Length: 357
Ligand code: BGC
Image 1 (tube, rainbow, N blue to C red):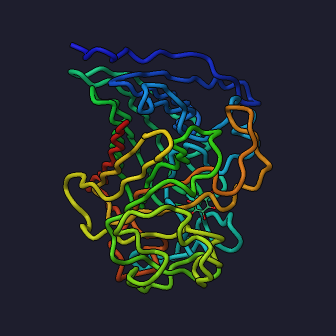
Image 2: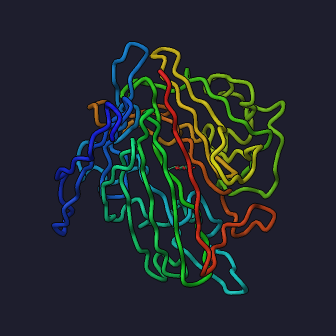
């Protein structure tokens, strides 16, 4: 039995790729949350939640047309793979074998290379289970795709619970030793996707350390204490409070674009690690994850060149990402938690977004 507010996912034609491939959108709703997902990139095209007065708004940045996504999206709402965030020079060694993966961010590899999972077509199947509704997204990434070894079979489950939580379960298997680091790249603006800056949003991150980066945003390997730096979000503060502090790390990234080392580490079950709140609307979101890290990216590279779903221009800081993950460049950092996946093993991680209003 579906809880009140739960609805079987509805499929619509969203558009077509240049080669004629049909891209569908799937609309689902449960517990007051409305989600629209594309078969292209597993993209969350819109995610609506109510404010303190029950008024829904789309709190996820995105586009209206498939053409806009294809023309160049900074990963709006997308599923990221095979490797979330950066790998230095796109190079690493696995069991003594040298691997070179797609370089698409200066000399580095970002989010799986030029044609990562965000721009691939996924097979989507709807489901209802008890009071949950959701989608299974499937994709097989061929051995050698973007330079990554092994045939990677991926299943991602998007679930909307009766409480309106959005849960993501990632699963993958390989037939050769490889590295995997999957995440989701929703840009949040809890005031609504055209609500202007997120600098007034309040954020808490349960992390005493972060991974400092070099000028190419590759971790140095150090785990630095957040205490006494702009990176200390252990006590709730606004995103904007310290974003203009003249700290070398903020200069490198033009704001926050770093991996926080979550105090809880890798866990079997999702543990709450961050809360984001927009005081103006009363909308709030708690992120829980099994992952050891989270990239908090304050939308630094949004530069007023893209027009979003609501018809407004996205400017720097109009959305922020909280990407649960293993640490960037782990394949080159033996001291970081491992991202290696071997045949016979199953990669499994979970992240839950719970909304309050
Ligand atoms: C990265 C940013 C990058 C952005 C792409 C984020 O996950 O950390 O450095 O610019 O994705 O839009």
